[in-house]
Length: 141
Image (cartoon, rainbow, N blue to C red; front, top):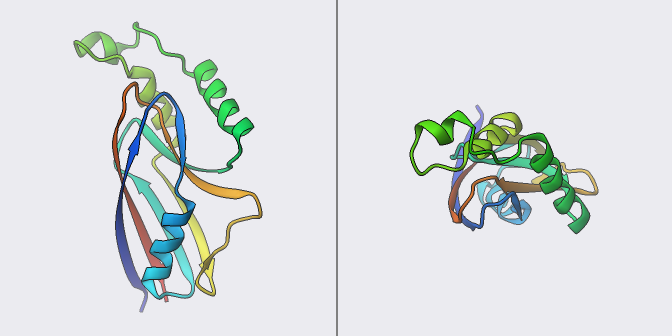
């Protein structure tokens, strides 16, 4: 029978496609599970943020922002902005839809099986600062 261990995380984020590294809190959640093998899912409970695995270094952070600004730019003509008075984050929702809210990482011997340069991050696409709620769920034995 597989065991499930769930941990909630809250992080303060600044928006504007900023990246926060959450590899350590995810590894800590895994350690707190006392499980040795299985999978960890990291899920962000928001439609204007995403969880990704990247090589977390300043160049990639800047490139990530440039990529999203080019692919899905802010635009007051997005329908979300037009039909919801005061909203300016239509592009933030679209970016979140494309990137997705979660990642799954295998683990063995109680350790995440990330590659040498892989790090788990949250990208906040919104237009303002806010707290972001995440769920780390460990499934294993």
